[in-house]
Length: 115
Image 1 (cartoon, rainbow, N blue to C red):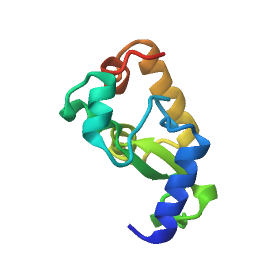
Image 2 (cartoon, rainbow, N blue to C red):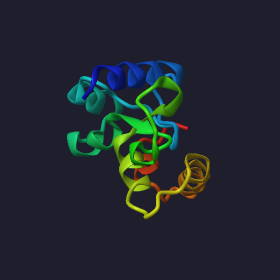
Image 3 (cartoon, rainbow, N blue to C red):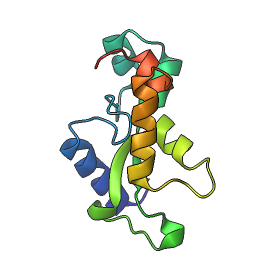
């Protein structure tokens, strides 16, 4: 991962208090096992919460690795957003995910019952 992208992801992670931009659940950066133990979930479930750099405007559409274009998103939310073609804009996707979280129909919501 390029250095600028790593720095932007780390900054976004800090600004978001370590929570996903979409589902608002905590994420991990370095220690999968510690995260799994802390939240009493399996390592397999914890993999969903790995912090990723989410390009708000995709690179293919001219988006850069700069801080104003990077948000921290859990691996699951990031991957799901990009499965739809074309991906929903970040604001619409965030509303979609939050609706599913409230309905308890989003995996990151069902694994971690925090909020």
